[in-house]
Image (cartoon, rainbow, N blue to C red; front, top):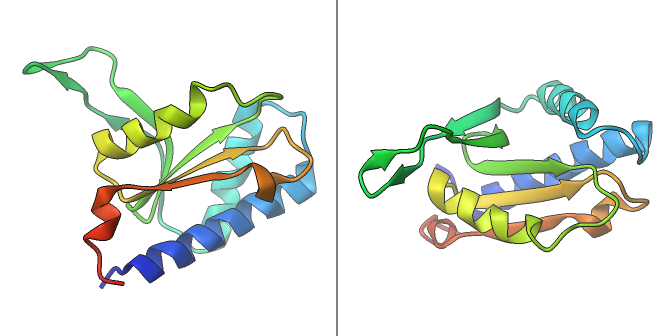
Length: 135
């Protein structure tokens, strides 16, 4: 049974994987490199992951031609969006709640690898769906 505590524990382990990738690579590389290494680290830590997950978007009964693509989905619960930017633009944080809503997932992590302290730059969010899970 999935619980809020289990989701938090998975998130904690995902963040540990991100810290490990950052420790080995440091800041300054392309997002695609961090994505590849992060996927490898998650697999090494026995996570079930999906990369570049397509989420269909329907607008007034019509499916849009270009679907939403999530960077990764871990354990079919947590959306992990990666960035490698010097400045976290104000548009990035509001994207995550919409991604969570459209994909109907309880938790999301936005991780920027272009930083000296990755643990201080992670943005974590939960949705109302998260509240439906037992503690």
